[in-house]
Length: 580
Image 1 (cartoon, rainbow, N blue to C red):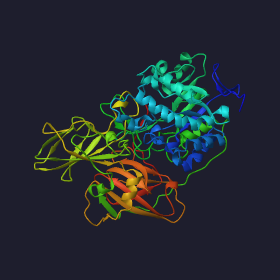
Image 2: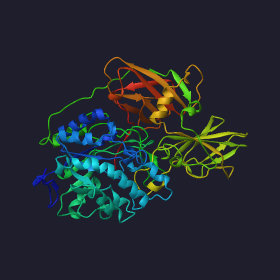
Image 3: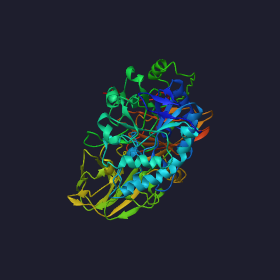
């Protein structure tokens, strides 16, 4: 398209094709929504009266191993952006490389942390080389979808909230040039809170602010369009806390605005981040990313949706779909396999005199272990006191001769071990890497330094990687090693059941009221973690991930089970608290 004039910010309002334009945006992350539901969610957003989709791009999903890129199926970003265009939505793309998003390590790949000198979000060459390699792939795919080329992308955000990090003055100019040199020509935006405005901006870019500082946009930028880049429709939740709810106020809607989130979706798998700001130790995010958004985790209309739709009635289109759900009959667990019996299906164990953190294990084609659990085994010659020295990230179940004796975490760093010469095993869980704040460089997981027994460092480890990736789950599921539930169960263990459907599958939610903590897999798909401490008490199961006929359900449980998986049509997010 020659001669077109895209989004501009040359006066106190935005223009598109030289006509006044008001951005009414909403965030929906393609990587948090099953691809079969992309169209449903985007059409519902358009029907609410919004005109612009915003989405982050998670580097850690698109480059799971260094130099190996994935933009297919659930990660087909081009298909997602084209779909938005076909539905009449503009797009503001937020390609990072850092995205925050309550996502593991803010979207940065954990293999970056294999470098002991790594300085994330700076011009350190180990980081910029990796960014350049990723942008070579990413920007090639999205540049043809810009407005000037007939596509839906009207603006691109440079990095994300860098003013709150601000460790390198040369970094934001580097990211800006990385975008421009690869063909990004649309309007550039940044997103920061008020304190981060100066350090987070780029020359020629328009600053978007969060809704806690929306009132100050005019005074900060009196001759530029007013843009609330993140108008928080709700808030995220952490394990052991409460479910946050939020009632937005209407006056900010007079600005150009992006609702974060319009539809939150789910942190499927092990991809949740962790909260670390003003806390003695990080608190991991829950699996649900419902966010108290206008569209619920499962895509339902909420009261908030209808209020917004009425407010934006002059812009809306007609489109009302309801995704049906079903409460299936409970599934009875038929077979189980203890953790110890499952070890032969993992990668070859690694022997090391000293403990090795998960990112530096020689697995995953030497990209280290990305997520999940790591089992460290050694021997002790007497009883005594185990002391983690705060080097266990994030929590460990401790076993003596495969019998559970207790746990260690950031609050309980010492454990008394019974007397006798025995094997000692620590099953360490990576609960999710911090996604925001100044501690990103310190997010290595597993055992990250010496741990002591009777004040002496333990040595002589055998280390098993339990990342529970699809290859491992498929090997485990198809093995002939499973044992009947009639025999006594030891924990931790994997449990398997079958679910038969004789008609088209519908969405549902899993309930595990007696189970304590673990992970659920359906047909090989990792639904995410559950934990009885809440607030979340259900796991979302998308209908498109089920099939007519036999469906395999596998659960990894740490401590307790009643051998039954229940289903409900209603999510349970726990006791609520207002966002302050």
